[in-house]
Length: 194
Image (cartoon, rainbow, N blue to C red; front, side, top):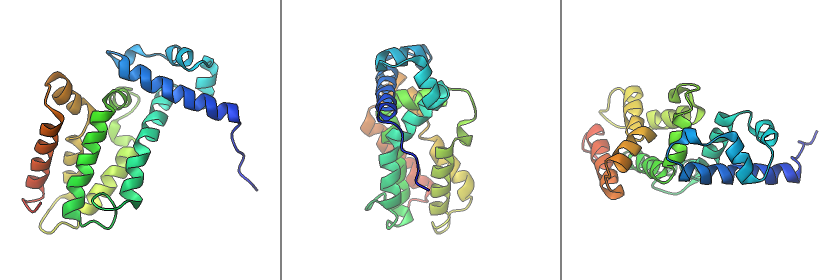
């Protein structure tokens, strides 16, 4: 049995909705200011189209976040060093966290919108579980490092969107300084072996 392909207009409408949502979230002062009606109008589709495609506002945000995160996820699964699977843990852990930080810096509006949906704990999100499992597995291979489960949570917390926004937005900490501070922190967690 062949899988049914979505109609061309549905694919086009979905892409338009995701692009419109991305633009609106990037321009707004607060992600709560962006409604499904705003997104539908900007995308040139009906509100019903959005609800059929994404279920609700949170579903749309998750879909957009997933689409933007896909290149990073591919680099981690299949890519070359320093993110790819052939990189030793002591190099891969800092590279992975740096890439997540850069992603959050580049997509702060979207990450804040997702974390701010309030529908469930960010720790229950599928992408969080995947990043945590990957990081925990890498940390378990670092000699002398105990508590990989907690360490993975603590390191991922350093890249949460609300913290990134607090430091880079309100605190005006420059991007390269944030990256250097994260690298130093990761180095201390890993025992200075980095």
